[in-house]
Image (cartoon, rainbow, N blue to C red):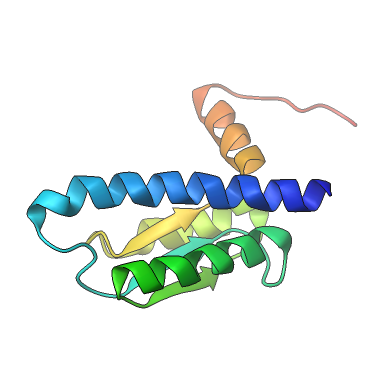
Length: 118
């Protein structure tokens, strides 16, 4: 059941993110006006990937635009982060990541974090 709860959490976070993005662009015209790419840091077929694809199917129907999921797993999300940083800055690309990776990444950016030996 824990995997299912995690998938719901990922989908809920993405829904909130894209709902906010849609509200912000509502005054500038129809958003999105071109296909959207979402870069995922999870492996194809994993629980976060399945939840993301389920969510993007709904977005595609609501927006009337194609929403593509591109997986870049590896290096604890750094590969996907690099791919997102290289993407065109035109609001047609976004990055989805898991909560644990986001928390660890932000903690590592704030200061040097030593995880020690497990």
